[in-house]
Every structure is written in C-alpha cells, then in structure tokens.
Image (tube, rainbow, N blue to C red; front, side):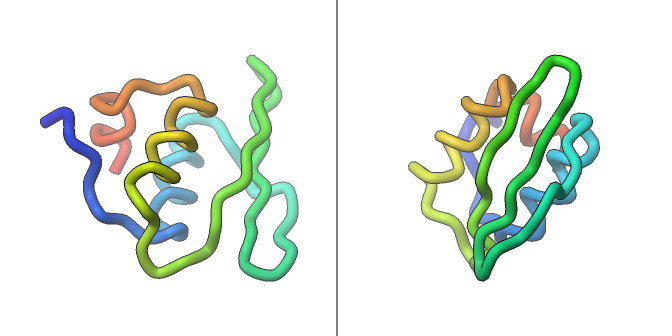
Length: 73
C-alpha cells in the first residue's frame, strides 16, 4: 500500500508523534511540529481532510517514506 490515505490534520499529528515529533505551537488552524534529533520542523494544517499533495509534502519534510507513514497511522 504505497498510496496516501485521506486523513485529517489531527490524524497526521498522532502519526508523526509516533515518529518523534511533538506539537510546538498552534496558531489558528496551523500546527507547528518539531523533532530535535534529527532536527526537523514542519507545519500541519488542522483541517478535516488534507489534500494528497499537502500530505505528500509533509511526509517528505518529515523524512519518511509513504510506507513508513502508513505504518504509523
């Protein structure tokens, strides 16, 4: 299963927390997540459903493959 599923911003937050990210802050509908080792910081929109292109960019910025991300869900 290499295709990205339809997920919400909160589901992405939960999955990325398993990968070592934590919620640094939230401003409006945008959550800023951070990981210290190795350093990475990314923004996840807190929407009901994320576009697949947006989700693919978040996964790439997190340094994960699509399969790794799907396993975290």
